[in-house]
Length: 272
Image 1 (cartoon, rainbow, N blue to C red):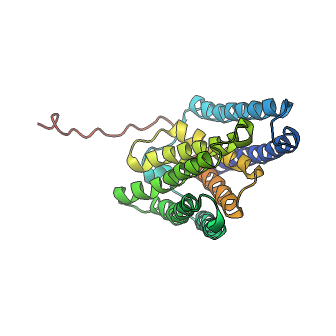
Image 2 (cartoon, one colour):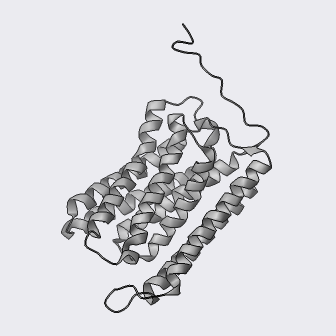
Image 3 (tube, rainbow, N blue to C red):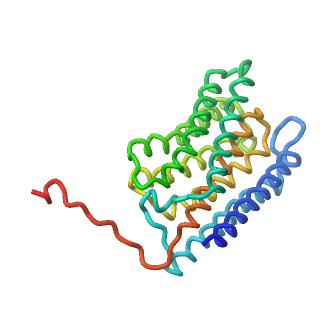
C-alpha cells in the first residue's frame, strides 16, 4: 500500500498547492482598494474547488470499499509507523510546530489579543510535543489508553483556541470572504484531529478520519495564502504536514479482506 499512500498524499499536497494559489488570486483580484469584496468569479471557483477536492477524496474512500480494503480499528494497527523515515517525519513536524509556537509567542507581545495569542502558542507548543509522542506510542506492543487520549486531544484544543482567536479578530469585520477561510480552516482541522483521536478513545470512524485528514490538510494549506504572524503560518504548515502524515500512515496500513469485528466484552448485566 506504500504506492497508494504516495499517490493519495500527492493528490492532497497538489490540491493544497492549488488551493493556496486560488486563494491568493482571490485575495489579489476579488477585493477592491477599500478591502471590500467585489463580484468575482474567484469566489465561485474557490467553493467549486473545495467541492471537487471533497469529491475526489470520497472517490478514493469509495474505491477502497469497493475493493474490500479496510483499515484495522485498533490504535496500534491503524497508526503503526515504524521506521527511520516515519520517525524523522513525525519529529520534524513536531519541531516545526514548536518553532512556530515560539515565534508566535514572541511576535504577539503587542497584539491586541495577546492573552489569546499566547494561549494559542502554548497549545501549539504542546501539540509539537504530543504529536511525535502519540505516533511513537503506536509502535509499542502495549499502550496506555489514558496517555493516548490526552496526547490526541491537544491539537483539538489548539484549533478550538485558534477558532476563538479568529472569531475575536474578525468580530467586527463585515466582509465575509475576507475571514471565511480563517474561520473554516480551524474548524476543518479541529474536526480532522478529533476524528483521529477516535482511535485513541476506542471509537474510530475510519472513513471520516481519512477524509478529515485529507480535507483538513488542504484547508490548512489554503489558509497559508492569507497574512498572519509568521509563527502562525509555520503552525499551519506543520498541521497540514501532520494530517498528510496521518493519512499516509493509515493508507499504508490498509489491508485486503473483510473487516475484522472486535470481540464483544460481555460486561455489566450481561456478565451477571
